[in-house]
Amino acid sequence: MTAAPPPGCPAHASTGLVPLTAATGAPDHREVYRRLRAEWGDVARVELEPGVPAWLVMGYREMLTLTRNEQLFSRDARNWRDLREGVVSPDSGLLPMMGWRANVIGADGPEHRRLRAPLDDGVARIDQRRARRQVEALCEELIAEFAARGSADLVGEYATIVPMLALASLFGLDSAGGHELLRALIALFGSADDSQAGNRQFEEILLDTLRERRARPADDLTTAFLDHPDLHNEAEHLQSVVVMISAGNETVTAWIAHTLRLLLCDPRFASRLHGGRLGIDDALDEALWRDPPMNNMPARYALRDTELGGHRIRQGDCLILGIAAANDDPLIRPEDELTEPGNRAHLAFSAGPHVCPAQVPARLITRTAVKTVLHRLPGLRLTVPAEEIGWRPSPWTRVPAALPVAFPPAPRPSKENR
Image (cartoon, rainbow, N blue to C red; front, side):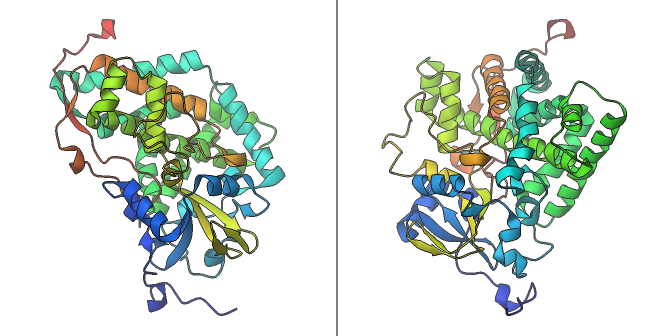
């Protein structure tokens, strides 16, 4: 085997392919995916970072093939040829999201099922009524901080904070710990130069929490993971918590933000929701169709040479789940912009063995956050043109950088009325 060129040499220059961040950061990301589909078909060649190519799977049927066939497409990044051969630098910002970890995300087959069971059991033990009350109180408290001002950033002051503090509460962290985790996670999901530092800080905070709970158990998910018979050591305990919090926070932030953005920017969507023709859960699913929380999801790795979408896929190739593009596949999307209410055939939660285990709490948090805004902030309007909304840098998620809004000021409620 020929030795890979060292990072930084000319061989690591751009491949000339469309960078994945060009889609997530575009004003109209679906137009980027449509151009890729026109050029390549339902599986397109893209660039993850300069010199690192991958396949972006954009066809709905191809996505189901990719996610359901773990005998051919592995979740284990140790099968990634470009990583093994040094094309991907050891300090690459991609690795916190794409590098192998000894957790449920990086496993296939029986090992995946063993590591998945604690997550499913943990979600099943959540008291949904209690959790909803806690999230409602959190949302009311956050809105009370800016309601009298008559203006706010519904991302920075609300959508970013709600899921992290809600998840932190489920795992037994206090508010300060939740804010620390949030800062680390924003860096991690950005897959930029500070990604690995953010990942280290994130794991350090959670490891401290695990050791605290081992000494003093409590009624929370951290203790439940520590007690689960399918998790065998501290590393597996840690990585189980890492998966639940990291995947849950950024995705729920995006889901809340996109639903509110549609409410503010799409008059048809807003009129159907306010007029009662679109229920709150149907509105949440419309947001998932148009802007799934993970626009692109890493990754699968081909275990042998094969064919997908008319392209030859080589053993060790990296394939990215183009969830937003698959949701926009003309084979399944109606010509009308609005999906029929009740249609949950979207792939926002992925599919196959690795389908999201936390759909129920994610929907609970998002529904509560959106309903509270609708109830508490009548007369809400965006204070910048919709086309000026920017996006957090990330090849994976598409979270608005800000949603600046104005509304009629409301008096801050007294503590007795909260």
